[in-house]
Length: 219
Image 1 (cartoon, one colour):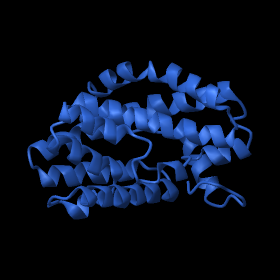
Image 2 (image 1 turned 90 degrees about the vertical axis):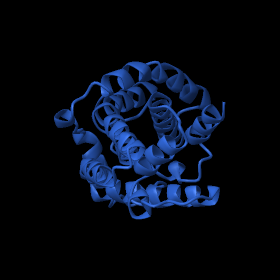
Image 3 (image 1 turned 60 degrees about the horizontal axis):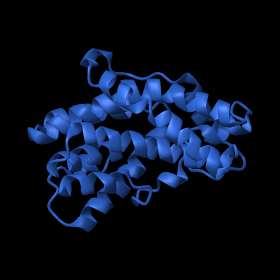
Image 4 (image 1 turned 30 degrees about the vertical axis):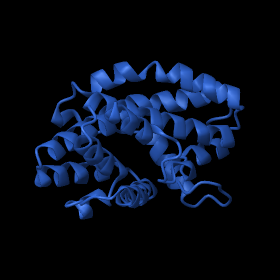
């Protein structure tokens, strides 16, 4: 029961990591009129779910989780570096690091000792994996939390930017969340050498967003 409650906490939109301040390139995609309605928002997110989530975040989360369980600091560090290399723009790398510092402050607020502080502060995904492993949350439950949190954050950004109504946003969460179990299963079957996500449109949008004249989001 306690592990289940911890998992709910990790999936919460109220987790103090500033997720609501990032759009991961969507703000520029809306400005460029790549994304203008609910259908295009759905297509934009599906493309990322089957690239970034499937081939990067979820398999690396699994490896960071196992390194945490086995106290393999070198392996943890290596996979963390791999993750940061997957963030294709300086803006996305900075987001990863800013979220990492915010998540570590969340951990500090819970109390305890964090022997890998220098690593945990570099990435929210890294801290997420370590906390999940040390809190005895199952890998599958942790991956569900990460995936749902990612989906909800992106749709909340779309509600503000596209814009979408709240009902349309909830419809997208309902529809796209049905894809997550299959994506998680596929991600757990990916071999080390197959890890790596290429999202050209997201990379272009993120690069352009760095110099966007008027913007609401940090990335």
